[in-house]
Image (tube, rainbow, N blue to C red; front, side, top):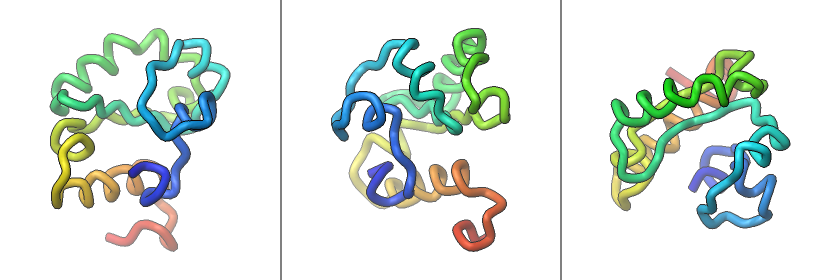
Length: 108
């Protein structure tokens, strides 16, 4: 979903060349050095993902995304894990995070 509809590449695809969900080590994440991180774990709501993001703050600090203020949390359970109309909103959330400010991509 992420790569097909939002125009973003996932860290998983950079590191493993697959679209399947896999666990990445922190070293793999550092090597990918993403310019955007969205924490939206399947099965977890926004509050839980925010809590996890804050708990990982020190680990996230070396990333370009952290330095540029581009770490986001979202309700993974509602917008990314369940089939249905909310997936469309999940794509909009990813697009907004990745391309906000680009008038050719994100419209109000």
